[in-house]
Image (cartoon, rainbow, N blue to C red):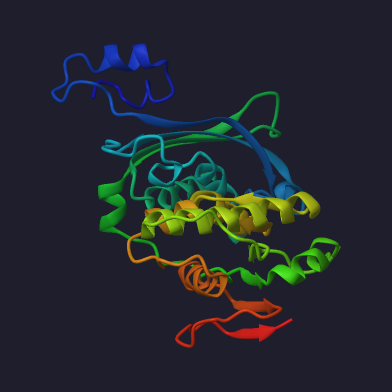
Length: 297
């Protein structure tokens, strides 16, 4: 690529012109984070200690071909992963150098399977009437040759399995305690539409669970309905409460339960996301083989 650093943040037409003589054809797709401003304590000078200053990040990530990803958010690199990479490294420890911060953010992004190369610019905005910063380019191949140690695993969410006769009580609750919780709601005992096929019966039963999730979230304003793994991961990293609409994950995941019983799908979800525990509300049958710690509310 001709002068690819210079064109990293340029308009696609300029990048295409710069690559005109390259073998390989069209430029790779990119994911962009532009002008993301946050604050952190960073710097080697004495005057930079004990005070926060503004940092501006611009990040361009070259991506592997999408293949058959279609319009499925769980099969692409989500924009929020770029912001999370920045915030996670700023939380990890106080650093002296922007160079170190840039390396670590790039390394975290390149750990994503879709990322092939990262262009990253980080600037200090409060060191004078100008911006002072660094730019780096890092590739997945180079990152794989010198991997960083894995950070400690995050504590998983708490999964609540809620029987139909207990949902109203929980919907009125205003608990301000620990978040990072997922609620799996049993539907009200009502006849479901009849269906002859196993797939149709499963989909109908899952839709009933989703209706219960929406009703619960409507009553609990601190709870959002989530359906995709991307939404779920984001909500748990942010310490949010969520009601699970299970159809997409159940139907899209090989080996997922062929059942809509909340004890079965709730235990599967808890094991899938590495939950720290399961809390049952009312009469809920959790499979005996479930390895996640359990307690009754």
